[in-house]
Length: 457
Image (cartoon, rainbow, N blue to C red; front, side, top):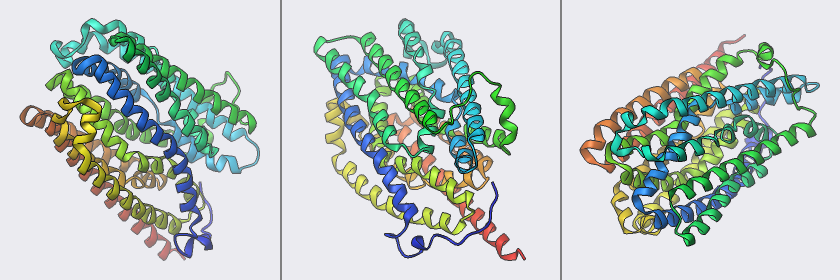
């Protein structure tokens, strides 16, 4: 992806209000955020009803079952949506749709491989799970429920459909699709609450919600491709076509490992808490994690939307626009985080009691620490996409790998010593180190890039 070095859009240079890229970024993020805000409310209602129906221990077991399957799914999943955007952006601007068809076929093939690996791992690890997590902390008698939920894995491998909708700026459809699974889950939970249902019924509801949400996403993505005459032919040896995309295997592998580490961390963290402190503690950890994640949701929507804008800027080699986008978006994000943080810090106990009753107050310190960690992480939302777009995907992966190793080491050390709050301190240390290393690498890369342009004849 090469090109000339045009001047930045003059509208971008005359202040924040005239910055078209920033306006478009926040418009797309706002569409996604509208869906996520609804999801947050639905999720709070779902957790509150589930805890009151199941009790803390069985709620923790539900968390363990779902996070075990989803964690392995995330571990196996290729982050192919990033390739769809990075390589699909210039492909859409080219003549014809041949390159885009081949790209979508290639990434779809990666998703199929992810599905096969995920299912194999779920069933291969299952017999050894009691030994890994401890027989007293693993619901061995619930293996039929684990198998049932595992059958929804094909509907969780959604990277390419997600990338397609982002490529075509259909953030409105993504916002709607994001609420579908939560809506089905909450509707089912309301019924189960009045029926005083047991654990198995909740797993069935989660299974149905995953299947419905995944099916809708695939349908909408295929519909967009058909409208643009970019639907890849089936069947075809898609992997043989990867040669027309320079460096795509290196890009896919680097971004996949990096995205996988980010995706599996919350899932496996709850499993670690369960293995060391038991299912009730895992349930409390999940409550705190979900609340902290809700604080980060607005900025995560920016992170998802910004990939498209960064890919376009990088395609045009607009480094000045890229730097401006990073700094301005981070400044606005800082204000959003400040307001969200104040709310959580003052109303933490009220939120915990609302969701998990008085027993959830045990997670107060954990919640404060995890929210602080989330605020640091989301402040850096633009750093990793920038590194990837500038050809530093390998560096981004090394940084993520090192900080993940630090986080896991701290979890195993601090949980036995400090209980649940130890997980919060581990999350805070992880966030701080990740932010510092990513920011340093971005500054260094941009500095080198500017120096190279200055010495060019």
